[in-house]
Image (cartoon, rainbow, N blue to C red; front, side):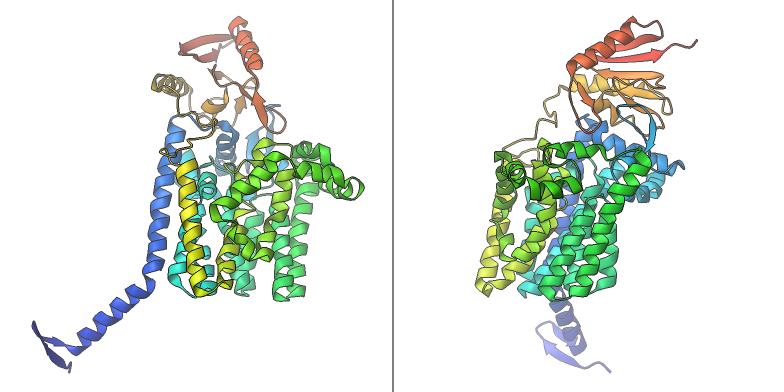
Length: 500
């Protein structure tokens, strides 16, 4: 029988008091955990809205969203990771450029929700999940759910995490949550789930093996688990070696096209190692440029460089930092871009661990400082539409609505399965098909969509603005009896190949 006690309301069961107190205690104990979950959901919804706006208003492009869409679509159609080469027009397997087989795993989702925005949602949601291992690491090392939640919220507020989430779609961005979960499991000495997360991270890109190898070195040194740490390092280096020296040549017929970004320092992994010993000045010159120093400042300032409180864990980011600094590619040291994917997980893991080395008061103050600076930075640089600093130039937020409508009508003229060639931005909406070429390549194209203000032309690796090449391409179409212009509005043109 349930006992009861008198109260101002009459009589209520004692068991009810205990049950109510239990629920209240449970809510109180997990209020910060729930706050992190709520922030993750709100952050994901807001960022999805931002990147959806970029997509529907033609601020994204075939390079890179369309390339990923074609690879996933082809896999769903039974041709794993097949894409159309941007400069040759040949049908190739994507692994000849970047070794990111995780794209194939998205094919079932594409079958259910066949839209480029599906990939966008996956990327935004995956990056949001990274807040969980940050929170868990903080809860363990800071001995406070509240302080841990502040660090997790700083992760979401940090502008370069948000910019990476809205940077079209890049498989390597999925390494951010995978690496954070890997750190969490390794910090817990749970090797099997760590191995799963580490392997998942490596499937997002050929260089992620070196990043995982550095994590193994940290584990060997920081935890004294030398055998396990060396095994992890060997597995990571082995993956990158196999990816660069076996998989890429197998599918490309030669070495990686991206070696060209490293010509000044050796042109290949082995070349960079040789240059380090034979010409260290060349290495120092490559990593000591003004843009490199600014890059480090922009990454560290929004968190007050708090990751230096756990320097060993933060140092796991050095291989990716070095790769970015050594590359002769301006976007590699642009914090808006996806090249931060192998850096930021270790910065935030180091913050969660490093703040734990301060006094209890210092931990709270440090977490508040990191969160405050991150919020201030995101107000300044976005990616929110109201950010003071606005968007980078590659997001054309000032494009008139009339022009966007003209591009939209032009794209709608192309049948869904027809081979097509297009300029870059229109290509993001035309890539779910077998043959999609980048102007000025025609290949088997039966339709051509040209936006005269979009003169970005792909090269073997990367690309650049080339208005002259685009004009010459359009003149060739205009003068050819094989092609007929069927649409011309506001500098947007559609051509159709004539039968016979």
